[in-house]
Length: 112
Image 1 (cartoon, helix red, strand yellow):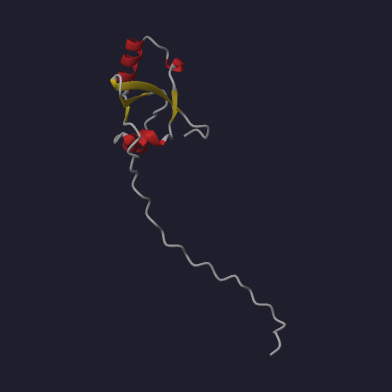
Image 2 (cartoon, helix red, strand yellow):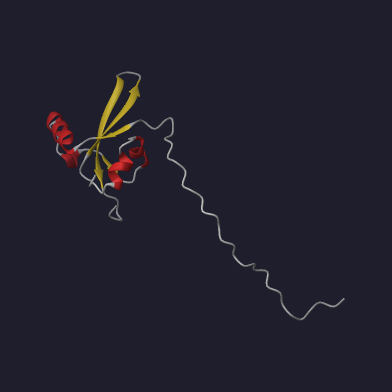
């Protein structure tokens, strides 16, 4: 049998991919809990620390660690501006028992 002179396309029509619902966020067991503070709480903490906000370590608004706070998704959906707020991070410590760190939320480069 001789091969056909017509060329067959190997490409098949693209089938519509089934939409897969997004998986719910589950924090990693090693990720410490983050707590987004209100504007009033943020001001009070800054006064207690005696520090300027720009001197604190930064955390991006899209950081997955922020999602460990159950209120994060509700705050984002409501359109509330989180930039400039403080985040309290509580980590277990062998020497201190519980180490508390504060971070300043900054917007992502895309203007999140």
